[in-house]
Amino acid sequence: MNYKKIAQETLNIEANTLLEAAKSIDDVFDKAVELVLSCKGKLIVTGVGKSGLIGAKMAATFASTGTPSFFLHPTEALHGDLGMISKEDVVIAISYSGESEELGAILPHVKRFEVPLIGMTKNRNSTLGKYSDMIIEVAVEKEACPLDIAPTSSTTLTLALGDALAVCLMRARDFQKTDFASFHPGGALGKQLFVKVSNLMQSDNIPTVSQNTQMKDAIIAISEGRLGTVLITDNEQKLLALLSDGDIRRALLQKDFSLEDNVLKYATRNPMTLSNPDMLASDALVLIEEKKIQLLVITDKEKNIEGVLHIHTLIEKGIS
Image (tube, rainbow, N blue to C red):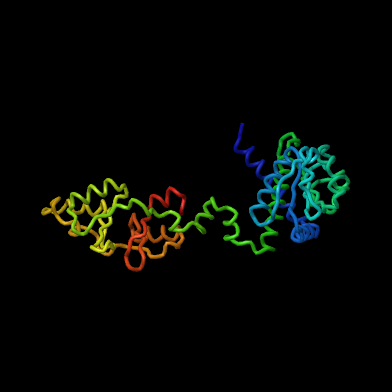
């Protein structure tokens, strides 16, 4: 059996379904967008079975792109959750046939609250169609299922129409990356736009030695500090230099190297520092990569040490 060919046929059927649907988008879609934009409450999505699963995803997309939304299961609605619907809300009800028994049972109650109802169905004359104030038609010529039974093309189209509605709402609201990130503070974009150096820098137990320290003691301090680096301070405890594992390796190549040598003989003078702990961590990572360093020292303008930021910390926290 040629599974590759079957997969290609499936994708082609569903792709053609979407292309045909794109040609038939009408003014009703505009009205649906305007209705949701004017909504002072929440956008509630409901449906059962496969339609319910698609509806839950749609609600999640709306909620994360600036439209307050949640999914309401019809069965739960009949057992108390109808109280979650208010007159200021808008409801999107999904049923391909339009005759889902569970969904049909709550439609009279939704209309009793005079809540605007957008139906997503193939059948305008169905129960859902008759209760809907407007219908976004979901009609497919053929399901991708070889039996033409299992919801495949129809669920793909419903999901895509939901995405199209969400994108229209985003455009209308001028929804930006920063807005998206504010709803996803734990996501990659949220970390990129909101996490600061001050949130990640190490402020305590920073390995430091004085400028008079011998190499043998500096090496011990590096091992104990577990940062691969020790900071060297002057007599006023201000940052003077730093000694890294790399500095030590280079020092060992010198013929006159001695563990009794002063640490400043091999240290990096005037190391790269940052005086703005409010810098975005993602920008700090760019700086670290450009300078080809592993540790960024955060100081105030007088070179007093406030903290350190290691590249490993940035990577572990998913900063990119």
